[in-house]
Length: 349
Image (cartoon, rainbow, N blue to C red; front, side, top):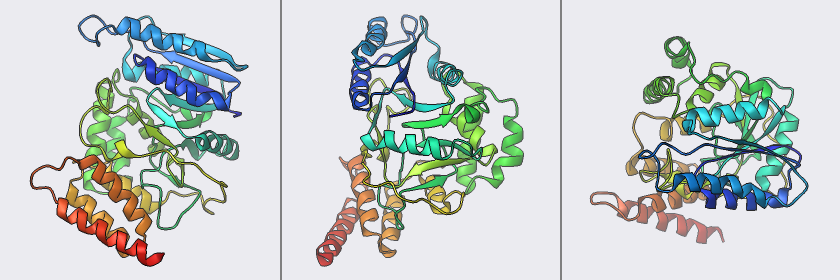
């Protein structure tokens, strides 16, 4: 691969080693590694000093010609400050590059996708990042090799120093943005409430969060994010030890990373995909988490439009997140939808 890579690590050396193993075939010539420091006694996990040192040592596995730069913290800065400062450190030294946290598992196509899009949109100020994520479950109604979205998704992504310069960990204009700008951006009232709460929490607790502030930087400039037609990076960090994905029955937990054949031509116009943005607003950026009935409605809508593969992909992901079923949940309705989709598949063959 051509682009330099930044790895963001902390206290999960096994994930760090796995990520480096995934990176080895790509052989980037410039690798940046940032490791946050251990938390004070009583705040972190048992043995956190040793775990952080092991994450630092993981970089010694680099066995290809590569310039390695290190940013190893002696004390803990927290998710917000440690990550945002590391990204700033990276972009002070590089004009563009790929950013991977330790729990991200990119596919081989992810790296080719980032290289291609970083070069393609290098001088387009409206395009602010390249994402490896597609949360529509890999089978859109009108398949595109890639498209634009308004919303940054950061489980494996790339950007340019020209875009990151707009990031502020504690933006002073949050209330102005929420009052004057956000109502024209948010897709519905639930989404408006979600972003209002998220951005205020991010402003008030910058030590813990950086992603929402990056979203604000993109949204307020009407920036575009390149997204792949299939998902190219999965998140393996759910469960114990995770900072933000440790609880709940997340549908995205079962999202797998796929690969491209030929990348192909994307959209003709530089504008966000309205249907995809609306889908994200309803299911990921809403005041309340979607319930099984919400997912049933979405799956049925895809079936009515003839997008059986898309409906089946979403059905599989939702079922994996819901099992074991809880009392009162519509297990039978999901089973009936699966039988209908299976019948369509047999008829098609």
